Length: 432
Image (cartoon, rainbow, N blue to C red; front, side):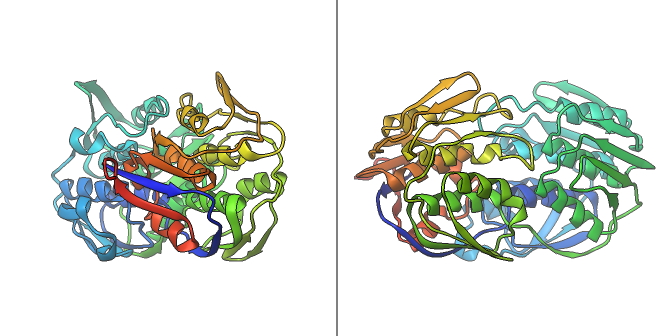
């Protein structure tokens, strides 16, 4: 099993180009189940993307640009960022457990399968252990649109005589729920209105992609999205938006150790809440329309934050900000409102010398800590990134284990950090 070995304290200099967004690429890839063809650019070379391509292949979606049957072993130097997808055999409708268990986003095949093939059998999803993330909202929405749904032996079985548009009011602005309903509604009869829709940029990117294919969507980026069903979708070329969480991770790295780190291939608006928090802690940055340059904060200040749906501070950046809070002057606090089990990394950071206490959904960080290298265990994707950042500023050597989690969402993060000057290597856990 792979691990990262990090020698802390080395400054970061130079530029890093941010990859395409995993959370934007995955729903767009799953939308290939709506039929037709398209070419998608800036597709990141990630474990979850490879799993998605394998799943789509089993569901009859052909592609050029990578080899799905070998995708799990695909080397980064052979990966094509531009992938053309087209519909082949439309008889398949089952997403099996062996693929779905590794990735919660795989539930996104449910809406397109119902809309296009009128039948779906999808294993209940797996993924990171950061909370229940129930899909009840997806299923209730599809039932309102005319689907018949049962759950047996760990599988969702759904069928329909044809989805019909309606008004769907979500009790919570779920991202995958909004995306699933959005894709289903594109081919449904009549008009669908999603009330309390997620406003995340990745949802907007999916909507813009579907509009580029001929879908009739309005209100994307707001809490109310209106979709007028069409008979079919057209071909198009489209480029995935940048990964705002990867960008935020490198911004925190720059705030910790940067000597003029330039983050390239980004836009300001999707990461405004991250930049605002770093500014509150003492960071200064320079921006262009496609880059942000940031220096290390000499004396970071403690602050408080609450994770919220977009445009609030993203829950996916909570673990990464904790190392900066740990060394800041004065106390900080984090209230986690999105997932109920997302402080699993705190115990590992405390083993490195951080002083963080958990009380329910709130973490209190005392600040002023001096982190020391240690062997630590990653529990989920974003926890992995937080531990890597902690290792970059720790005295001595840190070994972050189970980095298969980080491979799900960061494209060659160790190579990008090494190019900036970090001392980080991928090794086997038992390698001396």
